[in-house]
Amino acid sequence: MKVKVRRLEHAEGLPLPDYQTADAAGFDLVAAVSGDVGVTIAPGARALIPTGLIFELPRGMEAQVRPRSGLAVKHGVTVLNSPGTIDADYRGEVAVILINHGTDPFVVARGERVAQMIVAPVARVKLREAKRLTATKRGAGGFGSTGISEAPSHAVTGRQKAVAKRSSKAQKKSQM
Image 1 (cartoon, rainbow, N blue to C red):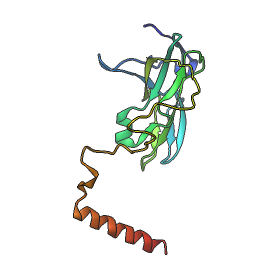
Image 2 (image 1 turned 45 degrees about the horizontal axis):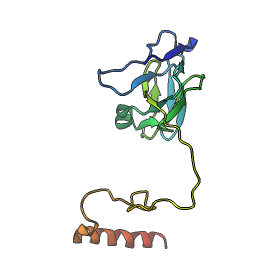
Image 3 (image 1 turned 180 degrees about the vertical axis):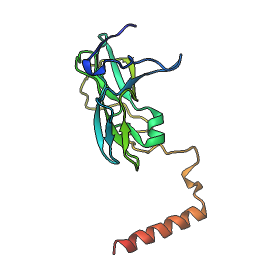
Image 4 (image 1 turned 60 degrees about the horizontal axis):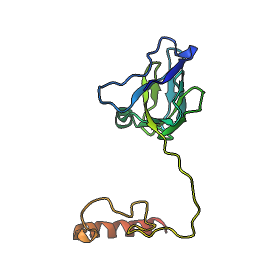
């Protein structure tokens, strides 16, 4: 599939996005920040990083802007609204909202790979209001209701219970 891309003036000299390996799902977006200094993101702060690119996605497709795992694990920097959605009819510059969850300021330099973009098909649905929905084994359980491991929940050791009890007592004391 071919996708048209327009490079804005502030992205001149920067490479077009490209897949880094033969089987990569996404291509990397680079920062089109100006100057030699770049953009510094303080710990806990966020910044809107321009890419200098406008995409014309085919109808029925979308692009998802996702974090790069290396930035997250090495620096605590990630895409805030992950995934960011680029609709097929959007014709503005793609920018990346980065947040620094790390402990040190992070400098985004011109040309640095800051996110990855994945182009995917869109499934459009028609909603039909219903008074009842089909029951399932899971029901309304969410937010961790299916557990975090295959171990049964009754497998809590005596030591784990003791630690939890001490923690609970400490919390009660700190609230007094």
